[in-house]
Length: 133
Image 1 (cartoon, rainbow, N blue to C red):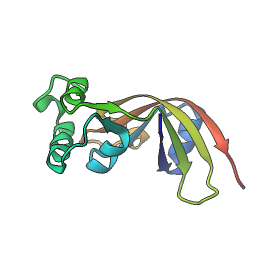
Image 2: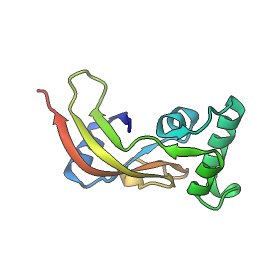
Image 3: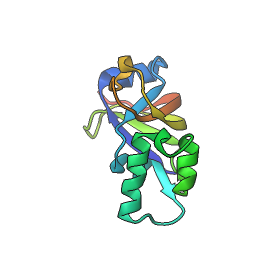
Image 4: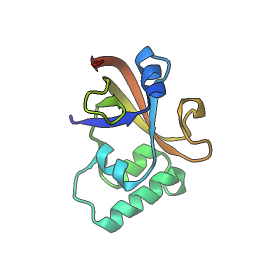
């Protein structure tokens, strides 16, 4: 399964590495939807827009996220994340498993917005893979 690459701030990087922070958040938009989910059939732009709209309010037309993904014939396509402390080539990196991706309100103390749903990537077993400097 492919990995997803996520640049993050030092504060969140250190909290994930220590095991204190167990989630990472990404805005619900097409950019992240196509990186997180694979589709049985290629979605037309209109269908992808519809999926993103539904993801922003999962319960509007679906009982839960799994039903929404079934409707669009989508599945999670990543099982690990490489989290990089910033954008520099030699920045510290860690790898973590992605147990599940949910849609909901994350923990504001861990960087989630307070008043809107996001993709919540549930992380497991963070491990430092590269350290420079």
